[in-house]
Amino acid sequence: MSDAYEIAQQRIEERARQLWEEAGSPEGGAHRFEAQAKAEIAEDEAKHDDTVDDSFPASDPPASSGVTGPTGDHPAVQPKDD
Image 1 (cartoon, rainbow, N blue to C red):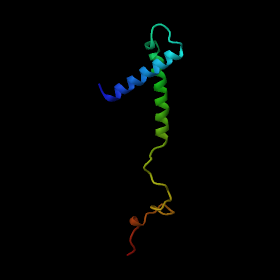
Image 2 (cartoon, rainbow, N blue to C red; image 1 turned 30 degrees about the vertical axis):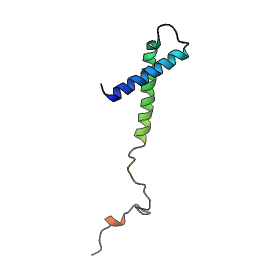
Image 3 (spheres, helix red, strand yellow; image 1 turned 180 degrees about the vertical axis):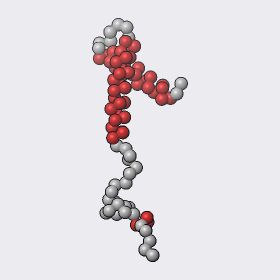
């Protein structure tokens, strides 16, 4: 199994245990809370994905900077006067 899968499983198990303890540690164990833990983690990851999607493309330079100049024109790519 991949490291990503193992990490995801560990997060689910830890969250399920936390939910189980918050519920007063009822008989049957934390595995009864795994579905809720999976749903919460999936929702959290979806929110994170939306945030990341909204921040891209992060590699675009600002329109005005010390590199691009006040108009966004870089002197190195200006046409030469003949």
